[in-house]
Amino acid sequence: MGLVLGALTPHPPIIIPEIGGPEVEKVKSTVEGFRALARRVREKNPQRIIVITPHNIVLGDAVGVLWADNFRGSLGQFGGPRDFSYPSDREFVESFVRKAQARGLPVDVVRNSRLDHGVLVPLYYLLGVKANLPLVIMSFAFLPPYTLYEIGAFLEDVLFEDPVPTILIASGDLSHRLTYDAPAGYSPQGKEFDRKIVDIIRNFDKDELLKMDPYFLEEAGECGYRPIVILFGAFDKWEVKTEVLSYEGPFGVGYCVAAIYPQRRVVKEEHPLVKLARKAVETFVKEGKIISPPSPSEMIPEMKERAGVFVSIKKRGKLRGCIGTYLPTRKNVAEEVIRNAIAACSEDPRFEPVREDELPYLEYSVDVLTEPEPVYDLRELDPKVYGVIVEASDGRKGLLLPDLEGVDTVEEQIDIASRKAGILPGEPINIYRFRVRRYK
Image (tube, rainbow, N blue to C red):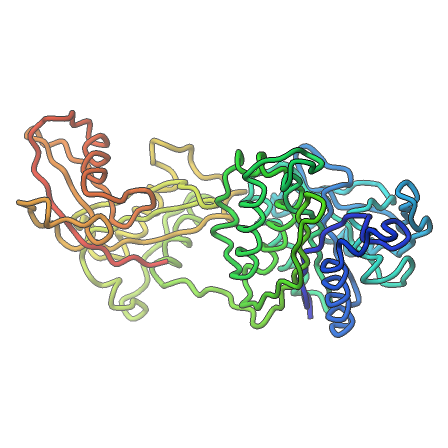
């Protein structure tokens, strides 16, 4: 069964009637959003709720998961209910942390039974002050977004093998700097951050979420970004529908209530050339062996060709190695892929060799190149369509693949390829172009 619903919830104590009193009227939209979310929670009939909070113990180098027999908490410091109590799903916590650590993920237990307002405010509306539904409470860590995203994705992998229907809640307010009297002061980036987050949720745009600039996040004065990243990671393998139930910022702080509905779990099927590259790397790193190519009867047509091949390896969205040949050097593409995959993981001078503990996080792409052809006019080039080779008179060559992020003009493409070859500006060069078939 696993994950049945995801949600983003704010956690301002003022939305609780015993605390806010007449001020609750100013956050009416948020209260209605919570009530709508509570109805959706009841419809899903969960047997476990996981809450990611930014206000519990934050470890320096790992996401913390609270370990306790039972949880208790109070909003008495705000003038609210004092006797919240819920059971802990300690068995799941122990299993998840053990599996995450075995996978090399930065996750650890935190021995703490106290619940903070980041948990208590959402649960007030979703469960009440007492319930028998077991909880799992997670904090976040100041780790790179891709790492937090991977932890969320791994959490869902564990849940997918678990029969217990589970709801995952990312507790977090948005910008605290929407107005001049806001708690963290005013910044024009505050409203822009909130607008972007709401759009990201509506469109489930994980790429836009993960590339947010750290300075922009700092200026926005938010506390929900990292819980949202973990939440999005948990739906990495799912087709989803999203619903923004409410958004407002009446006290200079952005409050968004949203739901994510899993529709269909989709595990991406890698192309056979990519599978071959992955197998070559994993066998070489683990065993120090070079695999044999598939037998002729097992080869797909693309493997039987002769062509130049580049194998690129990325980790958490960043390049981890890339080696290739622009002309064929082996009997067929299959052999070319195996050789260049191994070279990309172990011989790229820009990087240390790939370690075994990194293997689960690597992504591969294979580019099969057409034969280079000379270029006599720069108008024959297009950095999105053609790769380029630049060649100096003494034979120094530099190559750049097409359709690379951040390379938008022909001039940039030629400049980068020239610098890779150590060709100085003004040196005479010959230019060649080629196309690629890119497999992921």
